[in-house]
Length: 191
Image 1 (cartoon, helix red, strand yellow):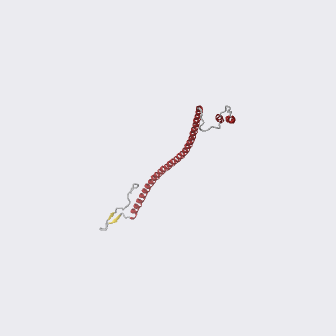
Image 2: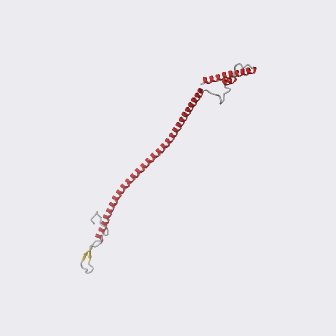
Image 3: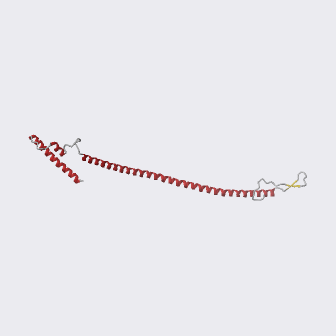
């Protein structure tokens, strides 16, 4: 790279010197009326002094410039595609990170929901077990009370209620009295 730019600078400098000398000689020749075969316009063009937008170019120079422009366009397109790819990857990484956070939150919620459901299942099983035990205990207590109450009534009837009562009308005979038991019969005892 360095050599090419040095070569261009040296060539331009040399051309400029030659052109200036040619222009100077051409002017001197014109002043003296000689003309020495030096064309001032050609010398100025060779020196690069007369380069402007309307300077004619050859088709080879035009082809070369078009090829360079095409390559510059291709390089710019490749850079743009690389930039777009990089930005697309950054966007993908960002969105993927967000989706991972959402998936993690959903998974954590699913685990929490399952844990809650399992807790309710266990609670229902515990409640059903306690209900069954309590129902058996209540039935047993009801049976015990029924037997106990019937025992008390039977004892009271046997102890305090006369079995034989004198007949009021005749006064001489006794009549057997039916015992009074207000409690319902239970299945545990034969009272």
